[in-house]
Length: 415
Ligand SMILES: *Cc1c(COP(=O)(O)O)cnc(C)c1O
Image (cartoon, rainbow, N blue to C red; front, top):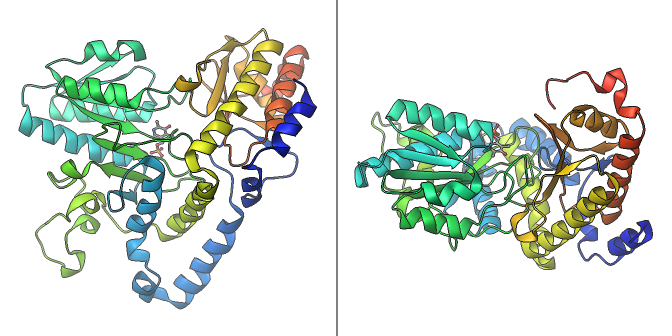
């Protein structure tokens, strides 16, 4: 294979036109959509309209006339289509961290009511830190014990003491994807509940929460859903659980009738009780545009088509890098079925400056301590020729002494 073959793959790609939905800076190869998705072309005008018309002219009336009050549910119904659940089952609210707190807390309350002898929360040692921190805090508050293990050890840890299995479907650092159906079944067979974090899955890989036996799920709006920095997140509870218990942040937006202004809390039916406070309307408008860029793939085969392009992109890039950069260690699984939409390589010493040198060349990935160079492939806008060129830039950076420049060796706050 050569660069012309990569260009030919782009010409033959039925999804190629979806890239037109985005404002990509000229000349940039953007492989960080797993950290912050690219700005859709529609977003600026839409947010402008919400600001000048809905807020500026409509003012308070827009809660009704522009449907602001229903945004968490309306947007939730769109995201529901991407993760295999029904309308009315998922809402957009708060951040991933906060939503995780809400579902973990509700799940632990359920366990305490149904199976009081169960005291352990099980997760993966290299799960994203915020997930582990939230679980640690809740475990400490509620008298549970957090057990961490390597991915292959998880099923063996599930037993009669297990309350909860909490996992991120696609690992943020390695790109390794869990078998959601198999692990959910293992958890249920052991009598435990399972909570899935879809931060690196929603809009990136096909997800079917209902079919694959999930109990609760949360996910992120600013990664593959292109909602913009700090976009609101989403939360789902299986309908058989959603109405059973209060979640701990019993704010008025989760009340059955917020505008009756009664002093006592009465939770809304179903997933609406997972709302807390007033929705951030401007951020929701931006997220709406981002989610639409993913739904635009539906007539072209949807997530299944996006997944097959994503696998082809990550395979091309990983194979090129493996062939041309012997200094790097492959971290992401080679098996398509176990790999999310990202490719990671490690270097014991120079990962950080190599990534900085790449960014200076206009190839944007990121670095995850201690040693990982991370490259996210969003099939909506990344081309095969980008994957080819990025691998070539990486090879050039490694064989030159470019990465040794002092400016590439100074650590920034965000890596
Ligand atoms: C990105 C990410 C988060 C982000 O949480 P915030 O509350 O938005 O900061 C949480 N969990 C995982 C697994 C992530 O990848």
